[in-house]
Amino acid sequence: MTLGFIGGGNMASAIIGGVIKARICDKNDIFVTDVSDSVLEKYKKDEIKCGKDLDAALSADIVIFAVKPFILPDVLAKLSLMKDEIKDKVFASIAAGVTLKKIKEGLGFDAKVIRIMPNTPALIGEGMSVLVSDYLPASEEEFNCVKSIFDAVGKTAVLPESLIPAVTSVSGSGPAYVYMFIEALADAGVSGGLARKDAYLLAAQTVLGSAKMVLETKMHPGELKDMVCSPKGTTIEAVAELEKTGFRGSVISAVNACCEKAENM
Image (cartoon, rainbow, N blue to C red; front, side):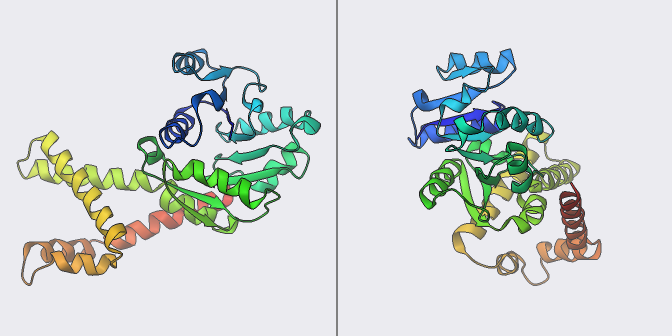
């Protein structure tokens, strides 16, 4: 496949690195449009074709909208003037909060648009990306091509668009909650006498290992938690304190607030 990006920021860079590493496409088949000279210079150094006008990205069969949501309407307005030239292309959007309906209205025709909600761990190949399953004029083969792009930077799921606010609040925004937990866990370690760098290592690796246990064992998180809690032990004492201070409730309230915000965007 040939792959174009309108917007060459961090997420675009992560996806490009992933598809090249997975040999989904060669760097000669990747095209980037961006208005920043510094961003374009980076891609030129990597020998990836790029430019400031939309024609650069539109050289590809699959075009990914990787700009900020507030910039996307301007991009769509420009593309709407090129309907006949782009009607057969597959478009994929990672713009948060912008629905398929809004994208198609902006383009002015029933385009082949696939919406994706990725997250920032895609930058290290451990992303969680959700592809929207409805409103698909794209063929199954075209949809699977787009899915393979995001498989190259982590895990993927396919869900209806109505669930995207919930997806945003769990996996889209979730890394921020996890970073706060790691920071808090490390702060507690420092309070107990650990050096800061050691505390961050212990906290981050513990979160990583625990997450892998959930994914690889397929065991319920509660069951895995029970395996760590010995009778009258230190862990159950900490768990009891977390319950007493509303740890679960705080997380659920935060995710619900994020979901509500996403629904109203």
